Image 1 (cartoon, rainbow, N blue to C red):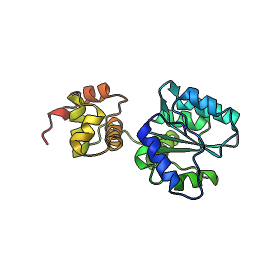
Image 2 (image 1 turned 30 degrees about the vertical axis):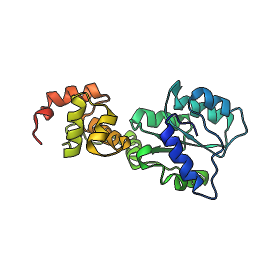
Image 3 (image 1 turned 90 degrees about the horizontal axis):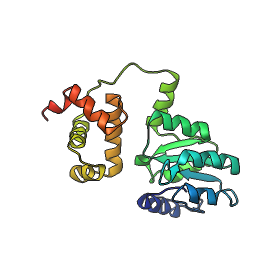
Length: 207
């Protein structure tokens, strides 16, 4: 596993420890540590985050494909933008899961990956289908009440942890709302979301 978030690593350890057929062999928290692991005998499965402190997990995927050609590689990340999805798969990832759906279901996905399957979160599958056949423009799709609340808090300068605390949900859930806001507004950043929301007068809406 290559993952820099201590809480997520602990959750993965717990999920794997609850099985009798999966063992977590090694961990790294950054690209440098991952490259050191790749000098060891190959593992059956490699779980990789994309947002690492010293680089991109996509580079780790490329290196793993060279050093461990028979290893099945799966991305587990918060990032769901189309470019990262496609770059990861092109680099050699056979699965792509969003952290919001893990780690409770992780053992099942690992077994599927090891058996030759390709576990992919539904949102990621949509990205892949969109790459084949682009959908009609949905940039002005209406926001849900919760998405609007998150957008408003973003515009007020709140960070993800603060929003999660206010809404009483996990940061991963907030990340899901933020991603949906980005998709509906057809933007790629918080600044872009706030700017477009002002232009569309979405922040003038009363709850």
